[in-house]
Length: 468
Image 1 (tube, rainbow, N blue to C red):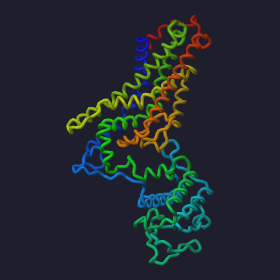
Image 2 (image 1 turned 30 degrees about the vertical axis):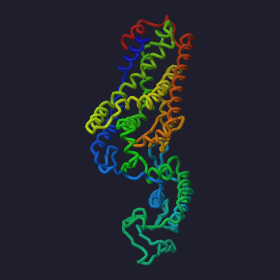
Image 3 (image 1 turned 90 degrees about the horizontal axis):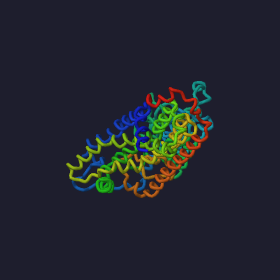
Image 4 (image 1 turned 90 degrees about the vertical axis):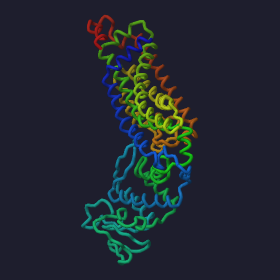
């Protein structure tokens, strides 16, 4: 078993796909994670840094529920953005976690206009039918320039805006209230309650699609206080960082978050490349008839792939661990030296097991590269939703764990049971697929219809294992 495992490991090291995986992992860690560590260490005196230690022992207050000022700012800015999207008929949404733009139909645009009227109290005339705007597909909300309007002032007559000089402030060469040069909050006043505003935003979100800018998830991320904002640390966050996370725990979570999307897909390339190498070298006709146990062959291959995939994941954070441990030693605080290993095996290892087991089962079953297509689909549709980026919000069937902030230890611990169940379920699914792969492989070895007979194996096929 050991010799078979070592042989599989050596084959993986000769795979271009494996080194492509290592290169992508390395670049991602260097560009995203390592730069974040260096940046945080450079600003230890900044009250927004997790390293910050207040000399007077006074930290920022813990945020309460969204207050009236924050509600008003959210309503004003979201409405201004909706005006701009409406004017250009271009709306942002995040169907697979990355931004796309969508153009609404005429009926949907009309619905958005009605919502804008209700939000702002402005009555906008249609410009589509006029000669000078016959090629325009949208309706200019606020006329052709940027106006600062006192609430309730000005009227529309015959397609033109009429206002007395004292009612308006007009800026040339701009278009719309959302770009006014004055105080944007003086451009218009909201005409609805906050609850009604949320209802309208949800309806607009439904018109646009999954996770648009106007979903409550995105609005709260932009305008509500959360751990992903660069705000002064609270006393609770300070204590969690130094006393619970012991500094390195926070960075270990952040490291796992940075590589989570990579391990959701690329390990399948390594496993599929290994199987493809056997096929190219005609190893199937040599291995199938032999007496070695099918379970040992599959388990050795599975263990070798998982080991080689996990190896660079464990090595890459060593540099930052040494740096953080040195900082803690100079500061006189305790650093958890095992944090990276613990988080990697708790958060990343189960996902690696699952992705490799899927690729192993599919390649044994189909004997082609379709596992790459399947894992690509899993990568697109199996990622957690945007609201889970900040961590602490776990689902039973999440394939990866997100925690894109150095804060939030307490939020994670509040939901630790669901996190444990999630990781246990992912591991169980992986081992089930490995078991199925063993069964399929054994059936194929005994069937005789899936490989050439031993008599047809020529001299080239016997020499190929040495060449490969």
